[in-house]
Length: 113
Length: 115
Image (tube, chains in turn yellow, red):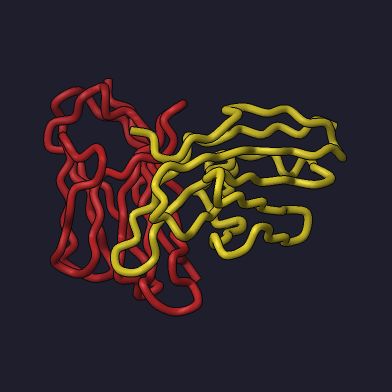
């Protein structure tokens, strides 16, 4: 049962363009939505996260947009760079107590010069 | 600042062999996790621990066992390896409190091939 659906699975973007990755969740009890970035040969690392009480969070070129009513959230990478080429995972969890994190299947992003 | 350290980084096993993957964290985190990563499947939770001496099953626990004898260490065991266990294994840790609450910190992974 895939509780967090992520798309697309792969994405090719021109340098300077906008990369957009979408996720949808089912469990309305989720209250924490992180994005993890994974470079080849490395473990995932937290990139940016949002809570459902805000509709948008921006950190540098990375922005999360959150639509609570639609149960959807997305990652936007502005002015994409070749160094952004990585696999991105969206995730969702409930805070408080044990924090089981449900991950999306991942999006492999390639930014070409 | 080592964070989460996994050993070994690579391993090749024959079907039926056993092995133990080691995970150590130096952040004094209460929670620790073992995931496997397979193409098109994302990260799937194998087992987790909410404290020293405790373990629990995740989504895909069959064929694996774990132990958390010390707070900083979380071991994943394969008693009789099968080709279906060929994967990249990640250990992670997190804290239920503090500014880093909810953030999972991952190791660099162990790439395991079972022939």
